[in-house]
Amino acid sequence: MDRKLVEEFKGFCKRLDKKDRVAVLHHSDPDGFCSALVAMKAVEKLTGSKPVVTEHYEYANGKQAKEFLKAVKKKKANKLILVDIAIDGDGNWSKVIEPFEECLIIDHHKVYKNLSSKKIAFIKAGKISKKDPAQYACSKLCYDLFIKVADVSGLDWATCIGIMGDMTFRSWKPFVKKVIAKRKLDLKKLCKLLDTIAATEVMAPKRMKTLLNEFYSAKKPKDLLKSKFGKYIASVKKERDLLIYGFGKKAEYFIDLELFIYEISVKREGIKSYVVNEISQLNPDKTVIVIQDA
Image (tube, rainbow, N blue to C red):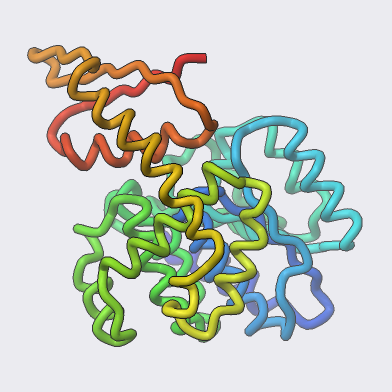
């Protein structure tokens, strides 16, 4: 464990004050969404106000980077918190760091390049924990870090959603069970909130920011069970279920390699990850490759 990185994280947070205008950039999936929630709450606790810019990342492309930087310039953001994005492996996104005085990057993907510098606190799960980074959901990583400097305990339930969304429930089962008991929730209700985020990502990606603010403003998770964004769940599940049903009929299986290869054609960009998660859960001991027909 690199304790120096944890101190760099604390140093970034200690230097935040009410004069800072913070931007948060996060991955668009449920884990990234919940990571952003935790980061936003921490920023408000540390500076007295919410981040001035909060944007989600869908796919690597220069246009998206330009749109983010345009918003940053307009809002005069001077510090950046980036969560659940392997920016060190994406050349298109390296430029997003340039306008900021300081940056905090929290991620649980593999390390492609060490971005640590005087300007950047670069926190990777594999560097600060012995746990398999793939099992350390970024939302849980954010929660474990920010709880050291700010009271983000009110979003423990959102952390559980991120954990389930990133398929790491088994690794954090005691934590999730404790939160469920504390909040008087159940897995079914948390799964509905998870489905709401995932379905919105697929059906209405441009409305993710609105959904994020809705989650952020909720006094308790039960308030979100009747969210208008829940209307997307049925449509996504219908398409997802058809693709999962097709897996049993169309996927090629290479028995010697314990490998499935499944080619799909989708109506909406983003549905593939939803399908991959479900198929992987049904085949935990097999390698599954899903190819999306362009």
